[in-house]
Amino acid sequence: MSRIANIKPDFSEAAARMDAYWHGEMLNRPVLIASTPKPGYAFQEGSSYHDRAVSGDLDIILYNALHNARGLDYLGESMPACWMSFGTHEIASFFGAEIVWTEGSGDTTWAKPMVQDWNDFLPLHFDEENPNWQRMLRFYRRSAEIFQGEVLPFPIDFHSNMDLLLSLRGDEQLCYDVYDCPELIDRAMEGARETFRRLWEGVTKAGKMDEYGYWFDAYGRESTCVLACDYICMISKEMLHRWFVPTIEYEASFIDHVIFHWDGPGALRHFDDIMNIQKIHTVAFVPNPFEKHSQYLDLYRNVQAHGKGVVFGGTPDEIRSVFHELDPARTIYKPSVQSAEEFFRLEQWMREQV
Image (cartoon, rainbow, N blue to C red; front, side, top):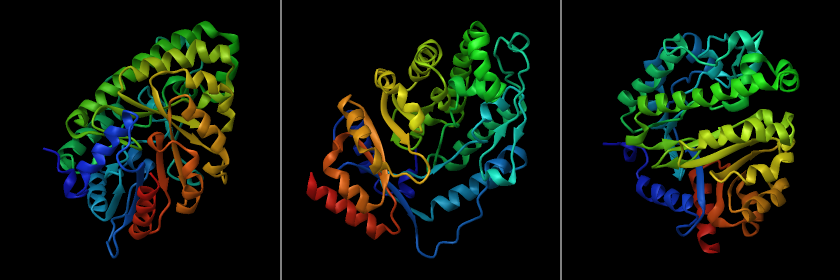
């Protein structure tokens, strides 16, 4: 039986509120997701993507994550979770691509492009015995054994779809390929879809997510995941419908609650096409660095007018300033709070507004 209530005593209430959100309803206030450190708690040093991918001891990483989760107050609909990832381009490493990490890239890792000619590389199919894939499965199995539902594992960073092709080929070369050899991209995308299926089934089974629940920026009792394709900012509408749309629709067919990671203003050219993807429930738009979510209020209202939810982050004052402009039943708020008391003041204010 899941022990998540050991860390989050109000788990049942939070889970019920998320159930309502996924069904377009609201229980006495909108969804709020935030966490703050408990005063005086001694946290263990964390581990970066680089440590996990190259040399990290999985048990140490997981026991430290469990220890650190006990030192946080998970407020509102936030849940104790552990980010299970080798980095943004990790999926390419399951095909044998070298993971690249530099001092200047922080926790982000990359993959060294390995496809010289698609004709030599296709069909796209990774070996189940690939060391990084087997390590990833061990990571999830040990998380299930150590956490026993007290902390939820994230799914991997699903930069799948055309982002997988970019990782394998390199961004510049892929931009040539979509014009020079689109029929090879057709074949590669068939493999990308099959890759997603194998990854999703592998990690959700290893992490016992059906038993313990799902967390990927939001909680779901049923399968919940953030899907992404940052490369869409670089392709035309015709290419979007040829490659991205059928692939994300396939990926979404495995998932009950889909959040789409909509990366940057450059991707907004495909607004109508994204809105027409039925299985996308919520969009998490990523503004440019130093921009605020409140600068995109018209966008969020337009998204909600199409029947989808939005994720809005900001200070409590920023959230108060836009609160009456958005549908509370279709908004996940992520307030940047410095204390639990600040969070509870915002929560009480919201209850009084609805």
